[in-house]
Amino acid sequence: MPPRTFHTNTEEETIDLGRRLAPELSGVVLLIGNLGAGKTTLTKGIVEGRGVTTADEVSSPTFTLVHQYGPALNPVFHIDLYRLDEQRQVETLGLDDLFSSGSLVLLEWAERFPSLLPADRTEIRLEARDDDSRVITVHATSYPAAPVLG
Image (tube, rainbow, N blue to C red; front, top):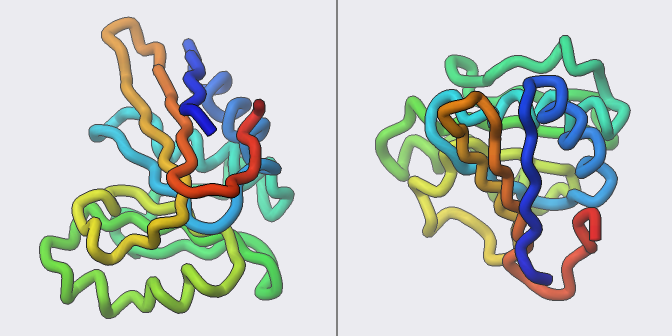
């Protein structure tokens, strides 16, 4: 499936896009973008769109590394690898178990550790513009992939 590009102008529009994307996402999803690009904001909408908690309950896992939202049987994991510098630090998180759990796993800054990532994943790239708008590109890296708002 070719990449899809979306434009948002406000934080609420970015959250709403996350809500709309949520039913289409599965497995491992990389959230790629600079600091302030809107990765956690988009995550708020994805998690709410999955019906596991409200957007207000979602926060950045920068210091805790991993947040789990929702019931134990069908959680959404939100992971932030920003503060980790070495692959061995990432390996202690048990990502392989999360990747094979069937849960939705949202990863921030994971592109820094490409050898640890599964080939089957979705990449969401967020780019903040000078006018506070966002350009958000969604691309599944494997086939067959579920359609993403397509």
